[in-house]
Length: 388
Image (cartoon, rainbow, N blue to C red; front, side, top):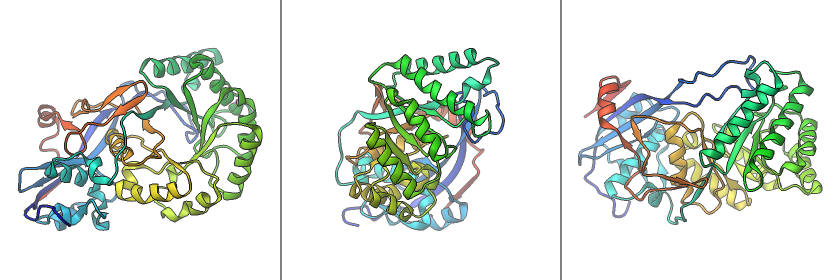
């Protein structure tokens, strides 16, 4: 580990859960009943905080599998022994990876993206609004429901986005199958009539479609210039090969995106898809896979001419982590925004304009705690703390 401080030690690690405000998004194709979304709903974000003997406090979203037992084994170790920029994170500490990137960035006085890769690229990182769900089904009449979708799309535009993702698959559980597909098509056509050109419409069925339904959907929305179709059905190389050929034959520009639900599977799962050239965009979860995993995946994707759009849902911190990583690869396509907010996390270092974000050059991950809010609401309520 050349030029890394040798005298830094981890003195304390703690895990806490904070509340974040969520938008009232409604249902997707996995829902078996229609539920009115809570306008004051909260999601919970797990955070790991790492203290070192030089006074550094690094923190980030907790990844899957982090435990107090793992934290105990990290006490008195140099954080650069757990994660160093050359090799990434040591496997047994993957649960603390996000916090470790913030920690080492602050120790070295560098933004995390400068440590994640040897190269970095410009700002103006595009992101899409990922909050347009089945809100039309909350209403008694079709007209009222479509008015709600219209309002949701107009809000996306007013919020400054230049792209949104719309959930498909109403016929999986919540409507009769044919009627559900027709409504899916109708809301996409409605969205395009509202946005006009220059606004990308992405769709995601959460694997609720059959192959034939995808073909019908593409035929009926061919004038809408759908930007990508995501997880329309379970991954299948041959079906994707046929779908890719159909898209090309039809003269569509629509991309095929996939990967969100396979984040915990070995990355080799997607090698046959990359080799066959049937996926255009890979979407493993940012927080779950972590930067170390995404570095490897992005190299695999680049070799297959596949673009990267890390999945992020239910996590305020995961999105900003994805932007830090996005600056390190040339084939980043989109970040996923759930328009979450928090009174304890200050994200103001990141700029947003015309559908794109800029990443600050402040040390670490570029986020700050509102310490007064933290002290009032969360201090003393940590899940666990281990220290030297």
